[in-house]
Length: 257
Image (cartoon, rainbow, N blue to C red):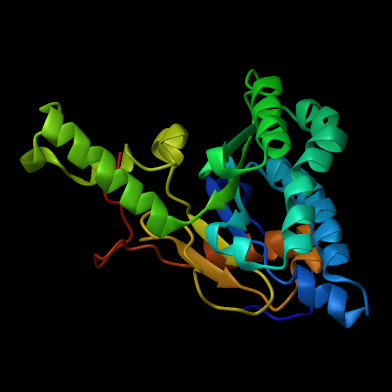
């Protein structure tokens, strides 16, 4: 975990992590600290998505995956869930011109069929409107849970085995990866760096397969307070790590695609 005081970090622009994933935590506590309703924290958090998206894109990150709504978040109060379901609609309505100007392509993964129709349509429109963009991929995990992802992948592989289109003896890491919700990211499916805000240090059912060899950085800052300088600092911390992938020397990541 890095500290709360931040100086201009020294980042090597030649070694930027290709895929950064962020667990955007602390919106509710940010609001409570200011005697505001929780939804005010979610609104400010979504505004910060715009700021950090542009910062990551300009640093040269190729994929930014954001944990926007988990399969467990349905347990929250109905009013809060309804507000969270409206946020993507408002976000894409207001931010789409800037995303296109930044050449950012939007992808959304998760169990999207369970989302309200308006939320699902906003996600579909965003993906369609930016599909020609060739810059950073802004990948939202929306109604996503890693255990459900793995269960669905197992069911799909079992169905293919029963149908005779997949030999169980041939299943390896690459085949499993091709059945996960990150398959659209190809060779960039596995994050190089995971950041979690708010001081919590757990994965919370996020990308359990894909994070096997990721570097992890935790910050006490609540997500609405997470700044581009803090992003750069997290990347600077990442650049100080020696990624050995289970070996003795830094080397090539295990084959997963």
